[in-house]
Image 1: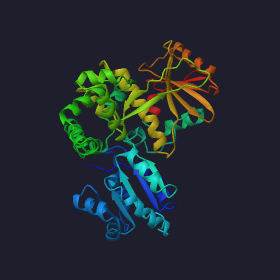
Image 2: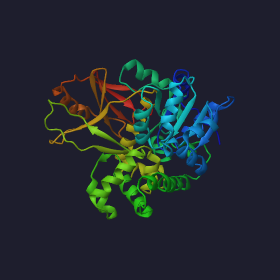
Image 3: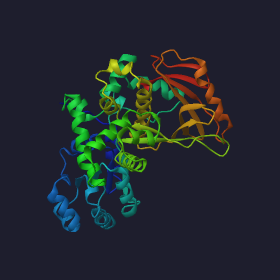
Image 4: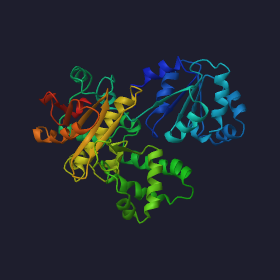
Length: 408
């Protein structure tokens, strides 16, 4: 087993020199605590986890005493289990707690960010941690937010290892979870099985008391079969025999715990015929491959979901480049009632950048024809791209590049 350096480490240390409190959020088991423990080595910082029932009880019933027993600098893990702590940490910060006093982590990001905004607004740095990125797994760990600025694209090649279509599907199938990819847990199937069980036992049961755990596991599998596609709640509900209302609530739990995320459709007042349905993605494609029972990268590469899972992987990797740089990402997709579609639209620096994601290594010019639809929008269209299996950076013309997915 070896520790994998995380791109976010530099940003953690930077904000800890400026803010008294740091809140690190992200899905379960993406390595939040492991990274912070690594950064704690050789310091006086101590750690307490609210997974411990006794510590959790004290934090909830007497948060002032809890903070006295665990003085700063301290790492408080799984802080979502004791929201009562936030008000008392606020008092410590307002009374002059030094920068870096409190490191907080949690895996229920929506709930934690709400709590932080209520009690610690302006007093804490909130960073988001994703599963391992391509640069962390296959490059030198350096990254910047993905953009279609030509010089930036050319520079990305210096930090990443190239990959053909077979290698790309191996990356997709293997996933990006540190517990497995670091070698700590070598059996992929056992790892993901345990992950699902732990997620349902802890997060789902906490948010839906009395939930049917076996039925919920089937529900997650039904959702995984539709990763990278437009959301159809009724179809997912029908697959497992629950009502549409139940399916909607269960998907909300999956979103709040960041097992899934959505891309909203792009629209503005000049684009009248756009649809309103979001597209659903999983945070980790290894989990999708496990849930959909693809036993090897080769079978996945030729399977029914090969295009959808490639799109899921690509979208997730783009978002990681923003999270690892502590920046927000305005990312959408486009589809209208005439079935015109653009896989991704990045809104950046006052321009719209359309992206198509394809398995091919030799994309044709017809793939960028839909980009012109965005010319009707009130925001100007910038450079677009086809993200595909081409080995080298190329271009169709000055307004449309051909970018290898391994370069994200």
